Image (cartoon, rainbow, N blue to C red; front, side, top):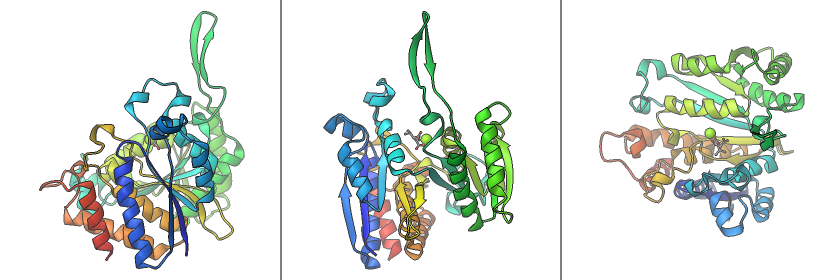
Length: 361
Ligand code: IPM
Ligand code: MG
């Protein structure tokens, strides 16, 4: 199978973790004899510097032409006070929308080897294995009207949380479909005691659930969910939620996994006629400018995102499983980056990447 992949390293540690992820991808392609075509493009702060736009037209064309896109991270402190449309993050929102990747899958697993890396007690975290399915191209991130307005002598800021029935339906189908390959349980998270938006969310999720009678559905309010994630993480299989709630809850999930550097993500849209998904793959972590360029960042979230790409965009489940297994082997060896608080000298980004390739064999 020909793997036609666009790489967008982005900002900060994005470049170094993506380098390791690409080396793993090359290694897999060679080992299993898949021709690999790589293109590289600009996204985020680096794209603003070089072209004036966080999501240049050229990147849009490259992404449309690729079967899958692997992204690093975006964001640089120098843009902290820039208006939203001139920030690196806008590039990320734009590419998600351009690719139509409406479902963001963020698996959260407590690896046995990392139980001590989590600040939570082992007995709480042990056995955690969930996927947060975050709606990614709707809600308050994209709703209009938005902006900061002068209004009768007062300054007012407005954002709009909006969802349509079809936006909720399609991401709910993704969640129920995924649950079937796992423990058959979906927890839908909303704020329906306050927001009309969430009332529609809950109603539509219940309707979709009728098509999946074999999958158990329950509902949690987002504030309670934030608490249950820490108190009883094993109760979750698939967590289905809207864009901003998912953004927040998935960082909380990072605490269960030991480090945000561990978390991969797959943003998928519609299925192509081949059955594969259009996909954008990125670690959940940000650009971490404070440690950028120091060969310290954990590349396992990025490498895990390659595993997700192999499975969802290319249907290469054996290859994907081999990468996932190699990640576990490296974790078990204890030769990991500083964020995972190893007992000995922390490994570098490059060393961890190389260890993964060796473990794949
Ligand atoms: C994420 C990030 C992004 C988001 C930012 C960088 C725009 O926090 O992917 O979780 O909020 O979606
Ligand atoms: Mg986030």
